[in-house]
Amino acid sequence: MSRSKPSLPLIAEVNPKSPISEAYKVLRTNVDFANFDADIHTVMVTSSRMSEGKSTTTANLAVTYAQTGKRVLLIDADMRKPTQHKLFGLSNRYGLTSALSNNSELREVVLDTGIDQLSLLPSGPVPPHPSEMLASQRMETLLERARESYEMVLIDTPPMMAVTDAQILAAKCDGVILVIDAGKVKKEMARKVKTKLQHAHARMLGVVLNNVSRSGADSYAYYTYYGQ
Image (spheres, one colour):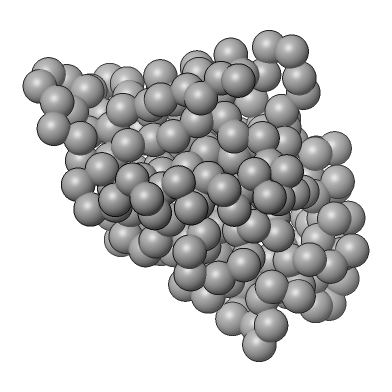
């Protein structure tokens, strides 16, 4: 399938040596360090609310992982407002919802992004009950198949404060990255999101702060590792 023009360039692909791309590589490295004493194959990326940069972060992180030679699958689980197919210039006619509703094989709905080692499972048609689909046994089975076929699975999910979708998926993933717009999101909202993730027994890998007022090359994004 040929790619149409992406909605926005993926900086990690078009300019892998840029300061912004380096910031995504730092994020990748920190996730790998978090993997030191545990197997982390499925990482969910979410935010507190819309327009904080979670989808862009997920896509560029996926690119940087593929650049290391790992087999990577990017899943767009934001069924209510899918974005990843636009970022890669691909079709959203079939995808995650198709696999879950029709019980299709993973290989039947995964798309080639045109980037070596990186595949995309787009969201697919918007379903009437996204939360129920994500909580289903079919979703569990799909993630197991993804773990068997890919070395890293990155999942783009809806904002935590908007719907329950991300909280449901957090319990099914090996780790969670939270993306926060430092210029707009108040600390209290960030605390509420962290509490929701804790209730889901999610393993927090860290936080990406976007739009941080910092001088130098890393002014675009800053990664904070929670640790214990």
